Image 1 (spheres, rainbow, N blue to C red):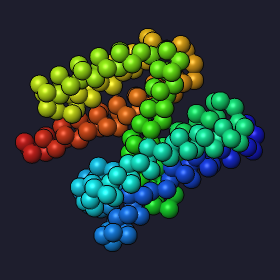
Image 2: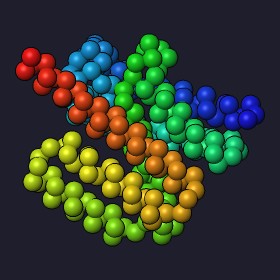
Image 3: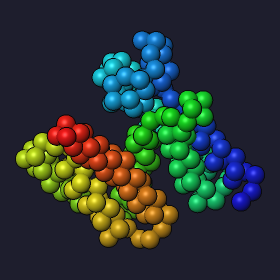
Length: 206
């Protein structure tokens, strides 16, 4: 690891730590978005607390942060591994921004932005077929129509997506990091939500 590689990770973290949800909350409503709604500094909470226009800006920016970090790392000439790790650094920056007492958002938007890029690469290289993804989307639509519960949808969708990636794609950095992001989103957005819901129900019954 050399200075340039460390610089790429530092820049990834700094870019990821930029929180449009926090700044727009302060600018538009003079509030700390983390103290309102569900307490998450992300696009969904901004939509409910601040409004649609602010939420669109937040979502676009959050989706782009990891990709910008990876692009800058590639332009710095670091190895492929550090290009991908720069994306992880952006997620870490989003979750743990230094100027907000290391309390940011969940990093789902930034993770999804990178994951979309990986899927595009897999489809372009014919590792993953578009028809297979469309079939998965159709199955998920049916599940959502029947259950109407996003937790159940996530419990089916994300493990299925991980299996499809592992089966369809060769073992390389894109496959490995795709798996990392899928597992991260599964744990943060599905497992933790289910545990929180379970604790809340248990508290109401006691």
